[in-house]
Length: 308
Image 1 (cartoon, rainbow, N blue to C red):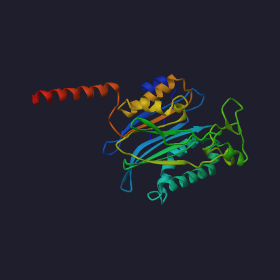
Image 2 (image 1 turned 90 degrees about the horizontal axis):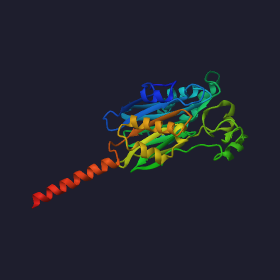
Image 3 (image 1 turned 30 degrees about the vertical axis):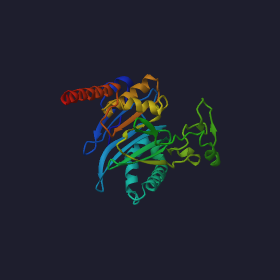
Image 4 (image 1 turned 180 degrees about the vertical axis):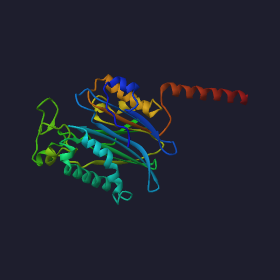
């Protein structure tokens, strides 16, 4: 199981701490990942959990990446970290119908959480899961506002849907709930929860959904990186901004740290969890482009000399 983290000093732990960051690579080393987790300024323990690893499963290599952003405690995200991926891979149809298997596993996992609610408390969690199969096929699922963004040729592509109360007001009201901006100025289900889909939340579950949105993508030569992060990042940063920052940094762990640092500089107050998966080693900085152009010009000049 991957490291969990709780920080007492946000910036110092981001820079110098080891328990809140890490990295790894696929078996062949062609795909690398890095992650960082930073406790926010709220007066409660860290509630973000993550998964980032490569495993061998039925003769295939799977990259498993996830962010679980908890609320009202950390028991539900901790449960998801331990069980959700295993529940997905236990589905008999996973290799023939991944989308259906992911949906069924989300439902069954949520039911298990609700049935253990006295032990897990009254809290809940968002989730974003990414499954990379043999480095070629990517499946992404989410509930809540944790997000996954893919970069192809430098263009940000959001792979998830932000499940917000205002956008799903109709379904919430159909279930007998309501959406209110009181207290505060954020739309909340029954004035309590700022997402319309989540795991757990037994007291609100009759008005909530845990049905995931699911997308897939082929990983080709144009695919550069994948970013998964909790809303501590996305509240202060647009998708394209995150891609522009991450693709300039070759080391994905350093890229994840830079994204978290930038979020802190923009005064993000929430827990920040970020995973960067790099599919290609090319870093498209202006300096690197000019260096390539200079070598190309030199080779042309040398060739012209030999021709003469």
